[in-house]
Structures are given as structure tokens and as C-alpha cells.
Length: 210
Image (cartoon, rainbow, N blue to C red; front, top):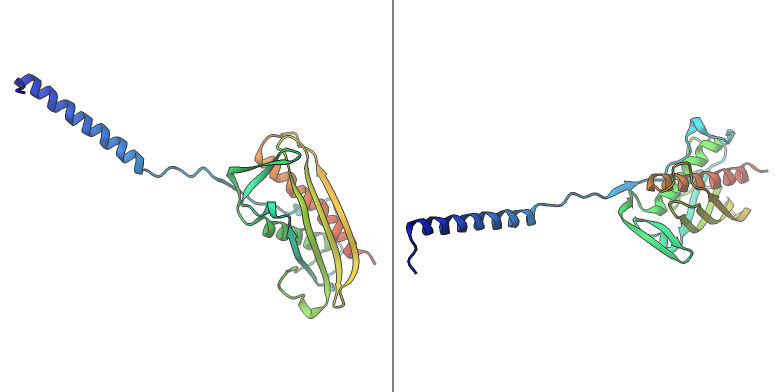
């Protein structure tokens, strides 16, 4: 088929335009998508806003752990309760550290403030000096919904070492209602931190008790 000069010009132009369009599409396939994942951490109680009085107990060495959690909590994705028996793991909202480490860290930081301690050790590190208090625990439940209460269900013991004498053994449940601004992941994580604060206060009271 022989094309006239005009048709040949149009044909070449269409081919060039088609090749340019395909090149644009091809390039867009290789452009990395922006990672929109947001990362969260649990926070200890603020010193200036603490509602619990600290007492100096520097003579007592305290170690957090050993502790463990229900296996469903072993996920970097933040879990929300959808129904009493169904959870949803958020793809774009992750913990910035393993949740088990975050729980232990916040418990330790809170105990340090509530008890006036200058140092807290963490399992598997030994208790300084070989004697003191161990806080052992198991997190049975630690979640809720964005617009309803979050629940911390924890079994815990205060152990005097050496000798492993049980000073306190309890199962505690803390329910933190929605704040004035429910429905956000930020508010949800803040309420989880608040639940740990209440538990830490109870553990601190058990450690202080004669």
C-alpha cells in the first residue's frame, strides 16, 4: 500500500505519539510507589502529668520479665476488634517495634517513675546484685475498636528473688473508654498506653507493699 505524502506524515506522527504514550506508561510502571505506612509506639506516662506519687526505692532492684503475650499479638500490624471474635489487622498502620518489646519497655519506664528508681533491668538480663524483684506477666488480651473501649487483660506476679517467693499474683483487667476524639488510630494507641499506665501503677503499689 502506497501512502500519499500527507497520509505518510500522519501515519508517522501517530506512530511517534503511540510510542511516546507507551513509553510513558512503561516508565510509570517502574516508578516506586510512595510507602504510606504509618508507625506507632506505646508511650510511658508523662512525668509532669503523673497521677501517682513516687517513693524512693533505689535499694530495691527491679527486673521486668520474663513476660509473654497471646500469639495473635505477635504482629507488627496494629490489631483492631471488629466483633467479639473477629480482629482486623491494619495494613498501613504498624508498630515501630515488636509489641512485646514495647509493652516491656513502657512497663519498665512507668515503674521507674512511679517507684523513683534510677535503673530498671529487663529479662533476660540478670537482676543487678542477684537479688530484688521480678515482674512476670502474660498479656491475655490487648486490643479494642477505634470507637469503643480498649481492654488490657494481664496475668502477673511480683516475685522476690532469689528464692522465687511470690509476693503478689493477680489477673487484672483494665478497660479504657474512648476519648473525646475517638475513631483515629492515634487515639487508639494513646488508650492502649493508658491501659499500661494503670497496670504499671498497680504493679508499683504491689512492689511498695510490705
